Amino acid sequence: MNKPVTEFDVFAAFRDGFPALKKWTYMDVAARGVLSNETRAALDAHLDDRMMNGGDKDRFFALIEQARSRFAQLINAEPDEVTYAKNISEGLNMVATGIQWKSGDNVVLCPELEHPNNVYVWLNLQRLGVEVRMVKPRDNHIPVDEMIARMDARTRCATVSTVTFAPGFRTDVDTLGKVCRERGVLLLVDAAQSAGKLHTDVKHSNIDALVVSTQKGLLGLYGMGFLYVRRAWAEQMQPAYLARFGVDLGDAHEAALGDLSFKLAAGARRFDLGNYNFAATAAVDASMKQLLDLGTGGTNGIEQYVTRLVHALAQGYLDMGVPVAGGKPGPHLAGIVTIGNMTANHYGSDDVRFNGLYKHLGDNQVKLSIRRGLLRFSLHAYNNMDDVNHVLALSRAFLKK
Ligand SMILES: Cc1ncc(COP(=O)(O)O)c(C=O)c1O
Image (cartoon, rainbow, N blue to C red; front, side):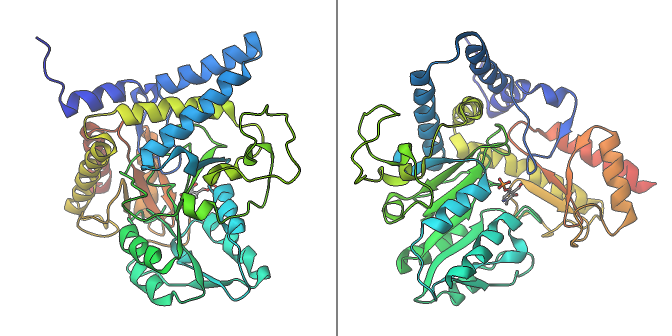
């Protein structure tokens, strides 16, 4: 009789498929993930086919629909609500330019905790008379209650990161989503730091639009992203760019020019443009399949597993007397632990000890980043408790000196 498969076995087998983890203690998915053997094999197969056969367009389009459905499944959306983008910036801009703004309308956000790519897109709309309403962070969190307080009858959109890139705290998207839905405000989330790692349910959280790039938690390549737009919103939107795949021509050939009085494609498909990044799609399709197959708890299982690891890492640093952003581990933690003091500097800490620790960890094959002066450890389902204990042991030895 086979031994029952435990959660430990499932995550250990998943980890085995990532050769980089034999070389690195890899805690840098917030910058970019590493590729699995399966993802690399899918990419190689695509390139081999291109090299030896030129490729088969029907199969490429089938791949696009398969990956669209997989991403929809990952966030509990419908395939027609998903379109392709080249990165987060593009997805955000597709939404921002798709809304039919009137001068005097406003958008609400907390720029100090957003990635700059979710700030400039809105500043660029000021030329249309759009007011950018900015709220201040509270305790380094995005204060959704304050965002709600700043919303009024002219608010068309509220936007937040699901998890900030630094200090890496989770945003209370559900509370904001509920109010946005009641008031007909479009809730747009930047899921760079959560997709693939945290359980995401756009229906449950009342998210109207969500953008992600594929090189982080989705464990794919750079230069590709997905944009989800809830059908009811997508169908009120006019894409700023339009091309053949954004037009509904039934089953007509990709080169067909239909009736010149064109009809936009259903849902978010109206944002599809020309040919897709088939290579990056082959990669992320394989990695999303792995994530969806992981464990019995699906993405909930991944979130619980990663949460246990980051809680142990945060607690380990606190026990050493190291300042951990957010203090005691709790629901604010979501796959990221940051230590040190928050500043505006992305190149180093203001404390020589932490710069030394960063170098020491790097010298010992630990991959992490510095963002806003903080040492940032970001974990995924391929990490394990040995990684956590190893980083804590290295840190303890260094800081004792
Ligand atoms: C929260 C967040 N948004 C956006 C980005 C990047 O945007 P883009 O995909 O457009 O490069 C990052 C990280 O690189 C991020 O952490």
